[in-house]
Image (cartoon, rainbow, N blue to C red; front, side, top):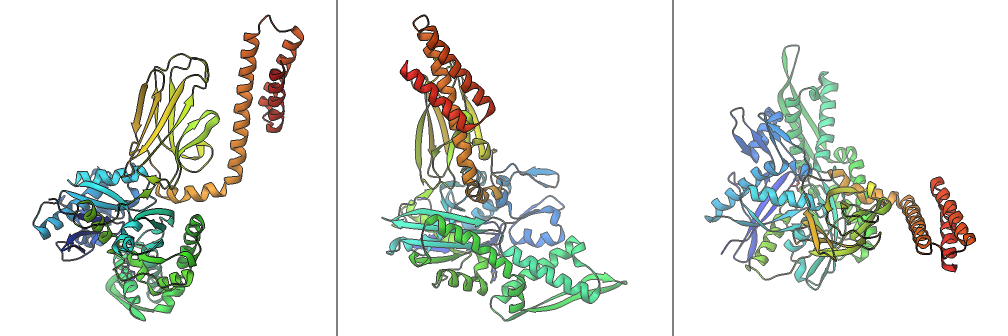
Length: 569
Ligand code: AMP
């Protein structure tokens, strides 16, 4: 039997866990650590380094080191190492290959399959890119699950009578809030929010600035001017930050950090916790926006939350924990190491899937709505945001033109009403549609999202059963900011979007009414009195004129006038 392995492929650190004697446990890597830095580097000789060794080399040659590649998953971003370009999948594959090797060394068995976690807001292309990275590393992904779901599984919340769980995840470079609802042993994501540009690194940067300013004041030299020195200070600052989680103060000592007047200069400085909390108070403030957003989306109050689970190394900071407690009026769950809890949950899910432990069936949801562009540039939602996956849905569309034998389909993801404001995921064409008048050809557009969140879209002309489709291509992607911005932007533009949709619909109705009138005139040729014919033609002209002037109220009025006239006649 293949062993159940769970992998948390994180932005700053990755974790592998397995099931041993019915319980999930983290597998130590070759360096004897539970967390493997998600860092890849190449030496001057061209050797690839992964994990702590790569992280160490980052201070000496930052230009040959890749960090936080997860931010670019599913984009066409490329990193250049020793003159070769690598995709985010290839870089992630180096990390996964090391995780696989370390698990194999620990278990003495070959590792073939794994459950891998991704943030709940990851779109389909980002999930697909994660799967590809695993495949490149020789790992078959048995399932991709959401990180907050994994955290809840690690706590065994599926076995308690818990209904609502808020997972608050502050890692090295990202912040995610997810609200899950558990019903009949199934997890549903009720809401997700976050900030893909906020994490422990920002707290580190504040300390870097603080210490660099101290050095500038005392010695008159700026450490920030040299990347190697700056990297040394960054590492020392991160260490100081960790210390400040347990101690009231921290010291850093960096000998020979700069040379001034031919003399080596040392950086010796200290900081106490309250100063650290003061210089980072605005960062804590930034955590509140996405938290409120998720609560509002889920329509729950703090009192209605049964559990608050903390995930991510940065939730070890006491001020962050206090903030969570103040916000939700309850003690957060912190029993499991916050930086290991997702990996552990992934192993629990793998254990369930491989039959090593009994457990739940998991359900995740689509973070954004999926649909196609239709007449008038409108966005037709086919699968709504937060739909439980796997899922499929279809809608029937008709030809917009007479004798249209080819139909173009533009697949989009987003929450805006007009297609142009959403994110394009791909396009395809259905050809060989039989030649029919406008509105008479029926094409069924079907969206299918599999359990790993991969999307397939097909279009079938129902009479001839001509069918074609695409699997969403991983090169058509969202930038990271867009993922979280989409929902915010849709809300900000809701009013304006509604009126743009309204206008587009009014124009579409007017166009159809003109066509109907043309058809009517054609059919009644020679049977209508010339006065009636003239009245219709005049009405059509008035409507066309209104359309060219774009006055929605006038268009609507004249469409109605034409409709009434056709009805009367
Ligand atoms: P993760 O991405 O969840 O592994 O979290 C990594 C982040 O957690 C990094 O920014 C670490 O500096 C931070 N971190 C880890 N341990 C601590 C600690 N004791 N206090 C504050 N931050 C920590």
